[in-house]
Length: 253
Image 1 (cartoon, rainbow, N blue to C red):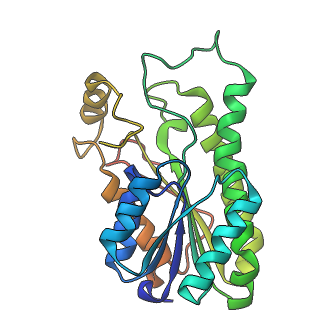
Image 2 (cartoon, rainbow, N blue to C red):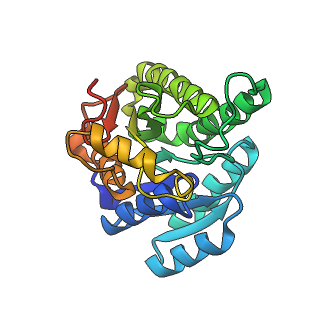
């Protein structure tokens, strides 16, 4: 299915990487659902800017019923089911090396918050769209990971552990859903320059990344968003269960 024929649900889409994902898919003519949790004004402003093929809908991705309501509302608005899900939402986390809890301070609650946002949230959004995808014989699921669980420049324990688990979810879903024409992949940037979550990252950390990266620069949110277009497009039709690292060559996997 061509990108302009698709209806794309992007979670956590009002700012940062999410905003770039919205702009990327909208530029290709897709219907786009901006899912947001708290950032109503930013989400609605972005939808208004991009036109009638973009709609902003609120839901806490940890709440399955709210996600289902978003999917149903979008189906009514666009008069077509969701074909593509991009699991991007990040729950209450900043990439701040100065405030990150160390191994002596961490609690299970810290981990659980990230597991709920990353794993439970992704599961909810996938399941909300799964019956329609199965009926269509087509679906694209793109999960947003990180290269930090392969190369922890900073030990963001709970965040990177949840993203490592997301790779497990990605590959198990890919194994089971392939028979229905549904692909499931993950794309992993590093610390991106710059998002709301990384605005507190120190310049020293970015300099370390630049010096260690073959391309000698930090990846941007738009460069990551371009890879989502690839996975959702006909060019990515034979790829599933993969984790594509998009970080200028810092991690070579």
